[in-house]
Length: 133
Image (tube, rainbow, N blue to C red; front, side, top):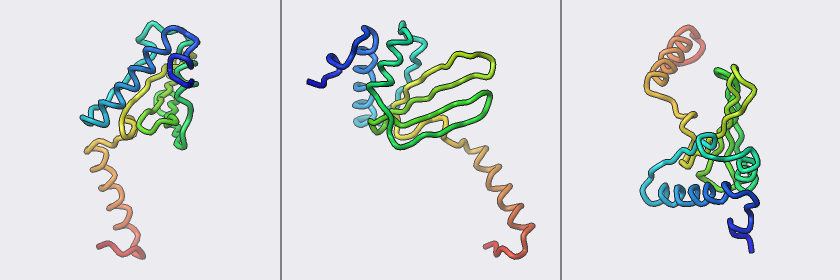
C-alpha cells in the first residue's frame, strides 16, 4: 500500500505532504497558490529529505544565478515545485515547496517586460537588415 502514511519514516514529513496535497486541491478548485517554507517548520534535515524524496523530480529543472544560486524543479506531481536557494552569504540551503501552475520566481513583472521591449526595439532599430513592423 503506497499511501503517504506508509511512505513516511520521519514524523514531520507526513503532515507536510498532506498539506501539499490540500494545497494542490485548493489550486485546482480556487486557483489559490501556496508556498511552504520548509525551514520555517519544525523539521529536521531527514524530514526535509523525505519530503523531497516522496515528491521526486519531474521533467523541468532551472538554475538561476542571482544573489547566490537557486534551483527550481518540478516534482513528479504537476503543480508542485521545489525551490532550493543557496544564498551567497551562507553554506546552508533553504527549501520552499510552491504549489502553483508555474514558480513565482519565474514570473516577469511589468517593469521588466517594458525594459525588455525597449531593449529589443532599440536593437532592431540598429540592425537595418532586420525588417521592423
